[in-house]
Structures are given as structure tokens and as C-alpha cells.
Image (cartoon, rainbow, N blue to C red; front, side, top):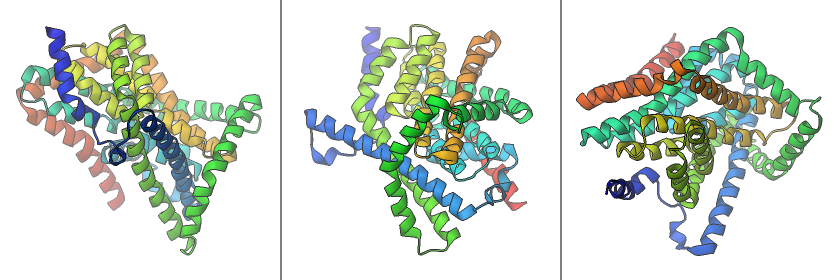
Length: 407
């Protein structure tokens, strides 16, 4: 009886978790033709994504010239860069969007040491949606307590990761050094066979996406360099926002049922399986926001423990790094090496954080305990949760950025 209750809860709430409507519903397709067209749209959308990232790199390079570091001088303070990453991801509700834009900017000349804090912040900002999903359960205190703990454990994990790796990066630059070495070995002049494969793939992707970038460059060519470059960046950002949303919705339509089955089958089978399933499901639906929001109702019903959900969302962090790696294939040469380094920073950061925290007994207990504490406070009064969300995701990032720009 209890399992039937869980399934009934999930079935009734599937549309809310799934989010967004099917973009091609007006075509009234079904069966094999629908599946073929859906996958074709996803493939084209990925091409548009790479084109948009390329447009951002081209536009930023055109507008900034050799003044890229000067233009981002306000973000030289790494704490401001961190807040930019948080706020940008909160506003777009997609860490994939923030990291893809950052990859394009780095390819266009943004220094990697400025980009790294932004990538750190993207991890923190992506946790907001799942918390809002949990707030919808506030009428049932016990379900809300379990659901909000599951939503906020992602938040607590990412904050712990930042607290550990942000000071380390400031002091010793391990991610910058390691990503630079790996990207140099893969795409540098002395890269060997692996580099030639990477360069070949990048060149092939470039042949397919370069016409789109050239078309956008031609469209802004009547404008002066700075205005045209900025316009190209803005168009690229808008394209990424649109295409990430489209890809996410299409993949949900194609795979979310399968993703739920993977979730249901694998999550309770140990820490490693939970992490791998979280990474796999997130790669399927191309959205850690979707993956973590999917986890909330499972936890709210008590079907899975907070510790099991914790392993799953750690994997979701790793899975969401794939899109930035795909975006890096849109560049070649020096630009390709810079773009790959930015994408690798995000991947290596999430891999290293997962390894360190999950293998250290004292550390791996902290996120679930902190999430449980906040959930208990929220059960007593939801204003604690509202205050937490406003403070962490809006007030602190917005205030720091505003003061920096004004002063």
C-alpha cells in the first residue's frame, strides 16, 4: 500500500516536475515520426548552441580587442566573480547557460582567472528551482520537511565545495594549472594523437557551425566594432537561453520517463551508483535543475532517504558539465584551447569536489545535516526559507555587484 501511495503522488505531480510544455505539440505527431523529428530538433539545437557560443566569442573578441581584462576589471575581485556566477544562474535558472556563455567569453579573450570564480558561482545558483518546488509542499509539514531537505542538500553541498576549493584556487590555482595542462595536452601544438582527434572533431563541428557565426557577423557588420561586437554577444546569449530551454524540453519529452526509471532503479543501490545515476540522468535531460527537482517528490514521500538523494545530486553536478565541453568543440587553435580549459575547470572542479567530500567521513555528513537543520526551521516557519533564498541568491550577490560597479 505504501508503494502505491508513492507512485500515486509521483503520477499526480509529474507535470509539475517535468516543467514546460512540449514545443512541437502543434504538429500532433506520434510514434516513430515524432521520435525521429524530436531527435532531429535536438541535434539542430545543439548545433545552434555551439554557433551561439561561437558568436559570443567572436563578439567579445571584436568589442574588446586586447582590452578584455580591462573590461572585466570589476570582476578582478574573485568574490565579485563568484557572485556574478550565482546571480547569472539564478536569473537564467540554468548553470549550463552560464557555463556555456563563460566558455564563449574565454574563447574570446576573457582571462581564465576571472572566469573560474564565475564557474564556481554557477554551481551555487542552479540550486534555487528545486527549493521552490519543495515550497509548493508547505501545506503538509512532514512532506515539506523531507522535500525541502532534499532540495537544499544540493545547495549545502555546493556551498561546502566552494568553501573548500575557492580558497585553494585563490592560494594555489590548482584548477587553473591542471585544466591548462590537460587542455594543452589535448588541443595544444604538442598534443599528439589525442590532440589531432580533438582538433579534427573541432574542425568538423566548425564547418557545420561557422556559417551561422559568419551570418551573424555579417548581420552586425554595418555597426561599428564595439556596438557590433556587443550586439553579437547579446544575440549569442539570447540564442543560448532559447536553445538550452528547447533542448531541455525536447529531451524531457524524449527521455524523462526513462530518466525516472533509472532514478528509481539505481538511486537506492549505494553511493557510487547514486552518483553515477545522477550524472547519467542529468546528461540525458541536459539540466541539473530538472534532475534535482525530480528528486524532491521522491524524497518528500519518504521513498528515498536524504543520504541517497544527496549522492544523486552530487552526480547531477558532474552530469551538467557535459554541455560546456560540447560547446568548446565550436572553437579550434588557441581559441579552442582556451574554451576547452574553461570547460575542463567546471568538470574537474565537480569531480574533485565529489571525490573529496564523499570520501571524507566528516565532510560528507555536513550537507545532509545542514539541509535537515534548515528544513526543520522551515517547517516551523516558512519565512526562514524565504529569508534564506532571498539572502543567498539575490541580496548578497546583487548588493556586492552593485557596490563594486558604483564604487
